[in-house]
Image (cartoon, rainbow, N blue to C red; front, side, top):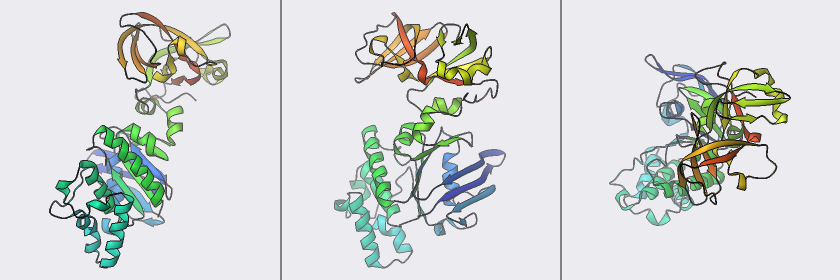
Length: 370
């Protein structure tokens, strides 16, 4: 078991900067998820830690040891890839044991480790089978088992669930979470799926264009995104954004989008007052847009007139795609809602959970106003 540190790590491919001054401290036994869109640098960060890519600047430490110049085989890590990479001519047992045989581990020890890993992953009955006789989920368990038998300090997972169907992904991510609890080892997991990140991680590192955007617990990321990118990436459906102006009217502070005006709760006014008469980006999550009939009690409710453009019945909820003037946005409402396409309706925003971003500070990625 060991901590992992990225200390001002930069990775360049020619003139392209894949990682830009990455600083992350991963605690011993932590489950850290690197998440972001394709090309954000998350897999590059993992490959640099594994020793499969040479870093351009900075240091990577496993525990107290700088591993920049240590070969991959000596870094005491194990990696699970998106592709299962199993040897088709070998049995499950031999696939899991192969790395140990190369290290000349005694046969009795190999047998103990493989059987113990198979028991953890509930694949004891598959040890004599060949990969072609296994389902996708079973093959992925074998790939994880091959990593477990090495008893490494750090486990690295590079989008291991991408090749599984939706139902199996849900099941397998729960199994990986249980595995982490059982092994009590450092897990670093790469995915583009923010649902995987939210459900599995003890902390999430959100990346974009090679830059770490925010590093925090899943709930804090969701409730307090640092900037517009994080706010839009974490959450499904994504947060709604509206260009707006803050203005004062009497003793009230108002968010004016041009098509609707909503009132800022009194307890939030102080931190936003300095942005009066300035452009802002107003953010509200779909689950904070309610049918007034089924709105939770005690919220600061702001009514907004809108036209229903599309409805998606999900069974336990309804997604409403709404139009308010030039603005389109999504609401996640109670399944008892009976709004019809083309109907003008009134919804309410829960302003207790509103967000404001400052486009004047960074037009490409406005920071949150906090």
